[in-house]
Image 1 (cartoon, rainbow, N blue to C red):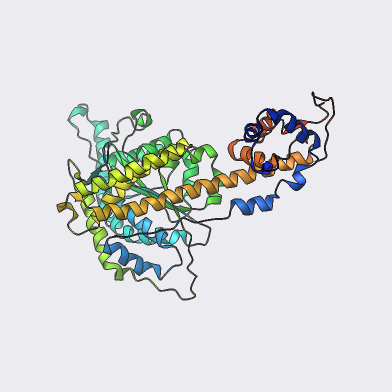
Image 2: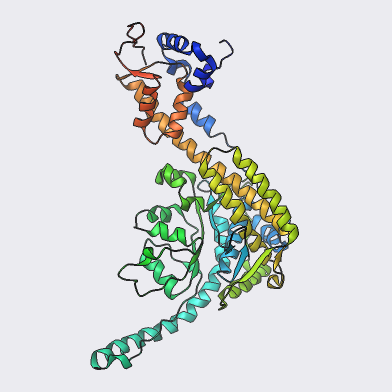
Length: 498
């Protein structure tokens, strides 16, 4: 009995440890409990400090293409943003500009190199900087297409106006031919809360694009939940699988959406996500597809940082333009790549290790994320890194060094995902515990019955979605009880102070 750490176990563990002695021992604890909140339950400040003692995921990389290393060297001296907050937007952009021109074979399918990246950090930490660097290279490429499209659009609108006039005059309207809308194939997609707008863009302009911002991404994420079917539609664009019922509305029945794909890139803060989304959102299919990049950095801000001349990054700029133009090609079938035999053998080792790790994990959502990371995301990054090499389209097999480089990235993203979900869970726990403790300390309704309340409160605050369900569970386990209720075993009224 003396060896039991009562403040470290839950009621069920306590019962198992004591066996037949549990009822009498637990009854004694309930009778003698005076005020466990005073001695056993940590203060909110202590809990907050404990739950937020951070161990940031470490970003390691090897075998990166030289062009990526040179980009990091070029950009890192001008910002105190972390290397991963600079590199990951770059790779996201390179996958996006390839559009639907290339695919890679994973264990079950052929997939595109589009990825969804969310740079997570505190306000003022430089999380937007890497995103902005990447987008500065994209904007002139998109602007060229916008400029080419403007006179085409003006001509189309004039022809359409004339067509409408002729249609009113002519009796035999079947002889009239409506003008054809000229597509604008710019990569950047608007961050709008309109399903109709996205359908029109994918049907008329481009079957693929990059939803991007260097401002707060969570504003757009919040709006996804406000429009019927919008989040489901965007989720479907991750793999190019849009259910037909999502685009069958009155203004778009004549439009054909042919397996559009999206990439996503933007920054956010954990506080913004926590304050605007529920726990169910964190574990939704949409959020599972987001790659969280934690912008933790040990770099100190400089009074006079290096001024970036984007013309100096001509090597990367030329490569991006090459990939951009490659993605614009009209091809009936994408160019397909796959692992060479050595890479497949190495992946089998990765896969077998993953199966063993999954056996030790109880959370189905985490298992689902790991499957997506190693059976899908790993292959996407292999394809992106491979396409950074010279004449990539001539070599259709992915070599082992490329796989190892992609594996470093995915391992980091796995740790970042765990860290992010843990941080959001901790924020939820602290918020819920504040409500529970405040209620128990101030109310005249409940009495505290057990000095193992501290850990149980943390457990129920972590896993229950509301104060009421947490209280109900604590009542069922008789860790608390309503005041002035007699103890059935000895008719003693227990009413300890709170």
